[in-house]
Image (cartoon, rainbow, N blue to C red; front, side):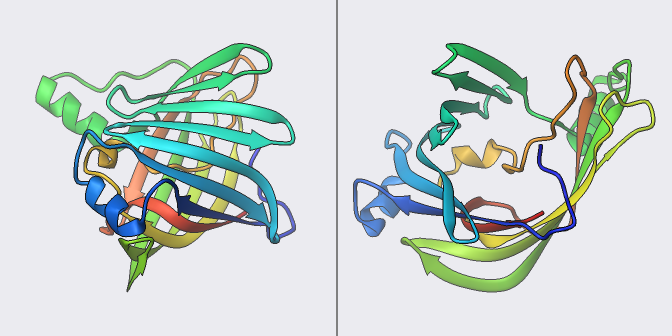
Length: 220
C-alpha cells in the first residue's frame, strides 16, 4: 500500500524513447497507426526498483513491468475506462474500472435526467490539485510543461477501507498522442481491503492541463 509514514519517500519516474530518433518519434506520434514505444524506470534514492517497457497506440497502453517480485502486464483501455492487470507467474488477471470522475458523473446525470447511481457502502475520494508552473522545455523531442500536483485521499465514515493519505507529484509532462488524452492521470492506486468495494470518486482542482509524465517525482 502507498502510505505516508514519518519519512519522506521520493519515487522518480523517467522514460526513454525506444526504436527511433526523438524527432521521428514526435512526427510518428501524429499518425494514429504508429505505436509509441518507450522504457520507464522507477527509482527510490537513485536505486532502481522496477522498470517497464511501454507501448501506446491510440487509446490503449500496454506496459510490461519487471521487479524483484516478478513481471506484471498492465493493459490500460482508456476507451473502455478500465485497466487489466495480468500476473504471468500465477496466470491470473484482474479487471479494474477507472475511478469515477465526479464532474463527469454529475454532467451525465443532468443530461440523462436521473440522479447519479449511489452504491451501498462507503466512498473513497481522491482530490487532485494541479498547478502549472509556466516552465517549458524540450524532452526527447516533446514540448514538456512543468506541473505540480497535490493528491489527498480520504475515506467516508462508512467506507470498508479507511484510507487517509496525502502525496505530491512534481514533474514534466507532454501530450504524446491525441487519443491517449482520454486516459485519466496515472496515480498510485487506492488500495482497498479484502472483500471491500468502496466507490472511488475523483475530484480535480485547478485549470492546468495534465499530460503524460516524462519525468516525475512522487513524494509520499
